[in-house]
Every structure is written in C-alpha cells, then in structure tokens.
Amino acid sequence: MQQALAQLQRDPVMAGIIERIGPCDLSYREPTFAALVLSIMAQQISSKVARVFKQRLLDRMPDGVITPEAILRMRVATFRKIGLSAAKTEYIRDLARKTLSGELAFERFPEMPDDEVIEHLVKVKGIGVWTAHMFLLFALRRPDVLPIGDLGIRAAIKRAYALPELPKPADMERIAATWRPWCSIACWYLWRSLDDPGEMV
Image 1: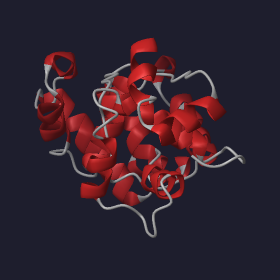
Image 2: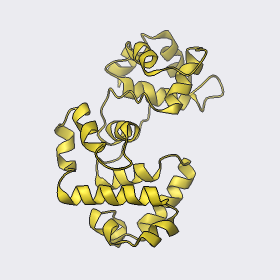
Image 3: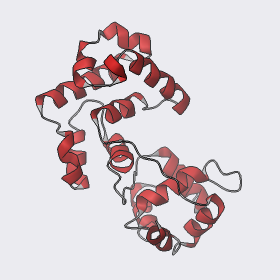
Image 4: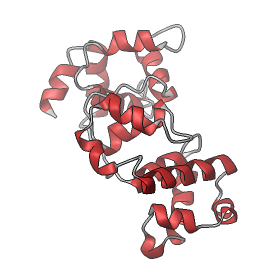
C-alpha cells in the first residue's frame, strides 16, 4: 500500500484527497459466482436496497449459499418476491446456465489478464464493462482498474480537478496516467471523496 500511495501522491490533486480521507481500507469479496450474482443485483439501485435483496436471496438458498444449481431451481415468481426485475432475473439465470455449462470458469479468472476476464464476463446477459470492472477491482483484487463508465468516479474527477463537465474516457485516461499501476486505489479514494464534506468523492 505504501508503494501505491507514494505513486498516487505524485498527483497533487490526489495527494490532497489522500490527506483528507486518510488510510485506505478497501475491502474485497471472493471471486465467485455468488459475488457476480450480487453485483448484478446491485446494478442501478442503492446500496441499502441491494443489502435487503441480498438477504432475501440468501434466505432462499440452501444453507445460505448462492449456487448456480439453486438459482436455476428457483421459480421466476420467487425472484420477483425478492424484488428483482424480470431483466435482472434473466441475467442471473443466464449467469447460472453459463457457469454450469463451463462457459464461465471462475477458477480460471485469477490467471487471466484483465481484458480476457472482461471478454468472458460480457458474454453474460446483463453484464457490461462496468460490472466486469467491479469484479476485477473488488473480487479479483486487480490493482490497476479504471472504471471509465462509473458515474461516481466521473463525478469525483470532475469535482476534484475542477472540470467544466463530466470527463470523457479519454480525459479519465489522461488524468489517470500518473496513477498507474494503482488506479484501483485511486478509485477507492475518489469514491470516498464524494462522501467527504471537505471536498469530494
């Protein structure tokens, strides 16, 4: 972590964010089928609602474990009772089918480069580059993920760097050039700065 912070603090703006926020306590989840199911469930809803849906799903899983087999045994009506839309239900079921068929092999992901992981994940209905980036960052613990489609990161960069509008991907890549290979840590600070009344993410 010290190496990451030393690199990030070469950017004066990022150095100021780090000073305000303090130590990084980025938490991770395991790179499993269940983690990806929860990522899909959390798309476009608040973290509070996502936690409620997660608990409702776990309550319906044998032994509280989310597995492809258990997902496919559940009736569509049960997903609706949990609170999931028809689209998210189909996304999660497609993920389960592709996992059981071997098209997605979670045990292989740790050895794959980032772009290959993304290529595999986006084959699943409802998984786009944003969800793949979140899986790389929070589950596979990759250190240099820059989620260019994340609205929070874009808003944080706009505020921190006093930009007139939300940055485009090319702008984000330019600004992040000095963060590499530690973009994931930078993103954690950017997200946190939005909660910081002192200034941002």
